[in-house]
Length: 442
Image (cartoon, rainbow, N blue to C red; front, side, top):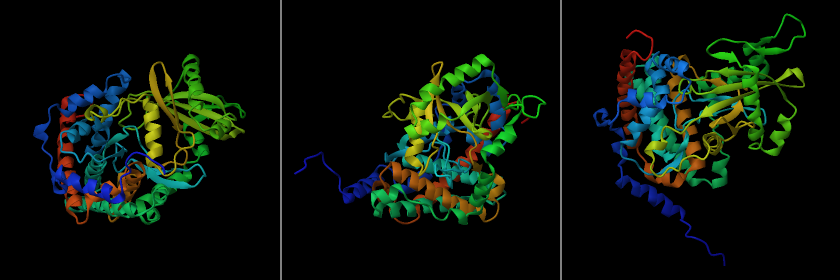
């Protein structure tokens, strides 16, 4: 007879989730009181800028000042502190950490098929499952407002997202674990914004990226290509700087599976550049390497992106400091995604930690304009189901489903929170514009 530690039965795990309702009731998730803040969002943002490339800090603030939704994208440190002051279920799973409407997208799977999933994990960490849902709910309300929806329509999108999440999680709770691990969301093609993102991804081939961000090095017809500078967003490195970046590939290749390492060995580096990406990552060091395999018609682009501690780490007393933040991001991504970038890995340079992945390989993102009309609610349902799959893969769907139960109380509370937090985000955005940190007029 095999003897082992206590193995919790499915019923015990479900009851564990139900018991957490005593810790925080499902209807309580609708509360948010900004007066309870101990530190201002601007102070938290300023703290998060430490160590970033100084000339790019103003650019980050300027990017955030463009709209409330843009502010929201860059203000994870502020929201992490806000979530930490709220009652928590204590039901832990892998968090995306930056769950918002534009952080889902299309990309190429290892077998070449286009898939749609959560695709940004810079802030990933293990934490209370509801934190991802609260951030997603607020983002849907903000996105709905930006796309011209009435407030009732924007809130309904948040309800539909969380309702879809709960329904999918209850289904996962009934399924064999192996089936959960390989579950495919089949409704993706029905949502028009997802279809639009997949079309963008179909066009975003490595050859398209080659045409977009490189140019011939000279007027000769056979001249090699190099990155096309567009400072400060894209700038080529000096030979010495390029050698440092290329030197970091040695440690990176050791994080790849042997067959991926073998494939990469057929590509030679041609040029290296510094690239500004996203909103939350502006100011962090981000490098791109242009490789060629079987000649100029076989390009490969790798992105080496600096990773710092998750904004949530300071608010999770039980969180162990990441040994390597690039590894934290890569492993969090693999835990939540059904299929991940085959070149996903990590490395370090000059005491800084980096994630490595492909750049723009068949990637397609959602634009706010894609969420007009009925598209918002259809997309919100997809967001809920994909978050549920990520949480079920990396957590315990029986415990989460036990907490959620049936009925609409949890979804309605989340939508209420989303609306309250969207209101506060708009106020915080105005504070940023008035602060003088961004060179924009109030």
